Length: 259
Ligand code: MLT
Image 1 (cartoon, rainbow, N blue to C red):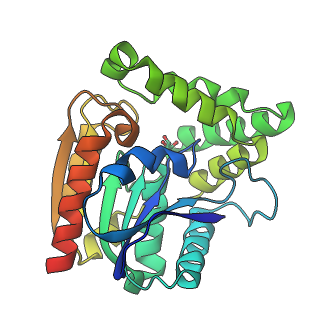
Image 2 (cartoon, rainbow, N blue to C red):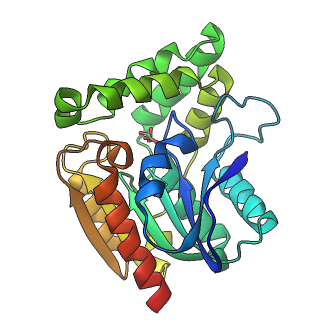
């Protein structure tokens, strides 16, 4: 696992960005470049991402959260605004559960707190087996077009092409690891309900994977949440509409500083 410093800044509070599947920290570059808050910005390559397929722990989002916490401790970060998109959101909630003192605020972007259905879990395990048996990322290659919304497919073909290129650079072992990790995660709605810091829930209005209804469920489960619906965006709002996501996160950082 690698933690990338996307921007240096004050040591009091860091912004930590956790990517979705099947991607890596680069999906946050455009958002990080637009954040105006004067804080250090770090983005993780979660276990198995960015082509890594060696030294992986048993697959679980808890293991991913523990590795993020260990890397942050190593980097001297003791308090962070933790932001996760989709799979990154699952890891963010595991961090809030297992490393509560670290998490000052939560940004939950195109994600959900519920566990997989039995069918979704079985599908993930099939994809994991297929990635390993073919030794390719073919089983997830098509996601470049299904993750984005209709507006992006029509008006921003460069975004779809960029996602496809990033997916191609992942490793079959890493794809399998992440699918098995996500398949085993529990429902963490209770973790969100118990979290006492500020929360922003961000969702693309065309997100077909974790739709607006899932975001409304998240926001209504938290004690202090704001809901931001991003126009003309699918599941990859941070890549499709980075300006709107950065504005929502800047606002979250302000709430964390003043709470
Ligand atoms: C993601 O974007 O991280 C994935 O859609 C998460 C998932 O498969 O649940």
